[in-house]
Image (cartoon, rainbow, N blue to C red):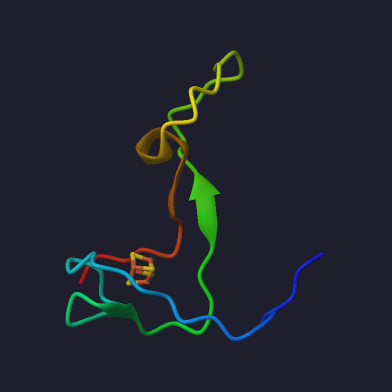
Length: 62
Ligand code: SF4
C-alpha cells in the first residue's frame, strides 16, 4: 500500500549536498522515502546502529 500523504510532518534534514535541502535545516519535499541501507546482505544480523540501518532514499545530488 502506498499513500502520498499521511499526517502533517515537517522533515528536518541537514544534508546540504542534497538538492532538496533548504539551508541545511529542512527538506523541501512533501514526502520522502526512507530506505534500509543497501550494503546489507541476506545474512545480515541487525545490530540496530542507526547509521547502519537507514538512510534517505530521496536524496539527489545538487
Ligand atoms: S531528500 Fe532526503 S537527504 Fe534530501 S533534503 Fe530531503 S530528507 Fe534530506
